[in-house]
Image (cartoon, rainbow, N blue to C red; front, side, top):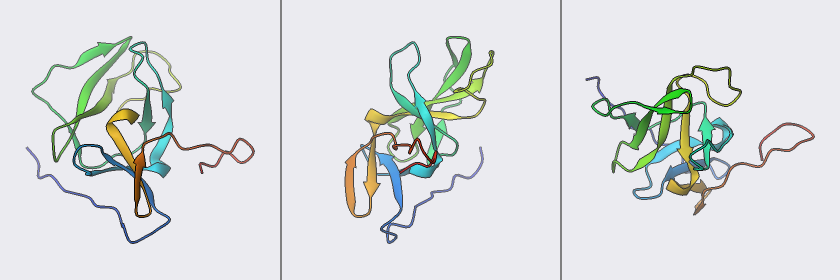
Amino acid sequence: MGKSFHVEFDVSDPSLRFYVCCICQNHVALTQDFSLNYTPATGVTGGVFDKVVNVHVNEAEQQRQLGLHTVADVYCNKCENLLGWKFIEVFEEDPVARKDMVMLQMGKLQERNGNQIEEAVEPITNTATGNRQ
C-alpha cells in the first residue's frame, strides 16, 4: 500500500471555498473542482468532482454496479465516513459519469466559506458566463 498524504486547503484565504466531511471536518474538495449535479437511479443527490483529496476507496470491498457503471465506495481518510463513490468503469457514453471521477453525496459534506461552515450546496452556475459562483 502506498503512503497516504493529508492535504489541507489554505484556510487563511477568505475567498477560498471548499467542502469538508460533515463528521470530522477533513478537507475533501474545492468548490472549483465541482463538475456537475448527479442523481442516479438510486435517488441519492450528489456532485461529481474532477478532483478530491483525503479520501480513499476501500480495496477490500467489492465493486458494484450502478446502472451500467461499475463503482466503488469512497470514504473519508480521517473518520471512515462513507462520502460517495468513484466511477471505476463506465460502459455507456454518459455526459456525467467518466472513469475515475468521484461522486460525493452533498448530505455528507459541509461547505467552508471563509470562517463559516455551512450546509453543503452545489455551486450556482452563472448561465450567462458559465462560471461558478
